[in-house]
Length: 170
Image (cartoon, rainbow, N blue to C red; front, side):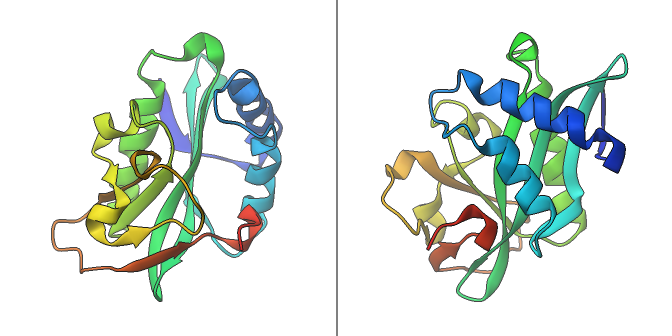
């Protein structure tokens, strides 16, 4: 498996991967593939943090981290993480998250926030975001709104997360 930054030529295949991954997802609005396209075209997009997993020339997974904000401090929002259904539970998601965190650290980001499975993301170091003083901009169970401190020396943070405008969250 190769983890690498997405290329423009990958976009159609990424669209299909994201769409397939969320077809049977417990929490999905069916628009995740369109969200990726919107985020890619927006100001919060970080090309180095749009990664694909590739096996035998086929894209099997994708992860996207975009800029978000908490009280004027830039953080990352992990969304979405997508793995083709037939490749789920094989370590691709873990590899994408780990690579994303490593790149994020090298770029100087201190926190990453995710809205997701309380059974999955804690395996990767995510804990309830309120532990760090980060709160959701909408009502959600605390165990599903999580964050990870990417750098040991990360500064204190406190406030409500402001997602990129492409998420359409007021």
